[in-house]
Image (cartoon, rainbow, N blue to C red; front, side, top):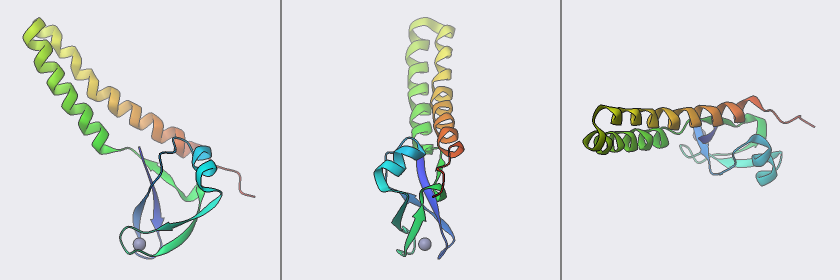
Length: 112
Ligand SMILES: [Zn+2]
């Protein structure tokens, strides 16, 4: 999962550097409002924690696909057709990303 916010200046999403898993975690880490410097146009904007949205991290899903392919090849050579159960590995990675993203996006902080 990656955290992004919209830059009004260049109208692109910019990534927020944080490992927060949920919106309250992000609030604890950065406060209700914090400055974000855009990765595209370098403009600094003040953002509310609710302006942040989570997106699935495609890199992690690709890693899952890679692990799935390798595991399938190894298991196939050892056990034959039953080795194909490992095609579920990328799905688990994908599901984990979607679930984490949904969890983050569905929870909003009450504005004070
Ligand atoms: Zn920008």
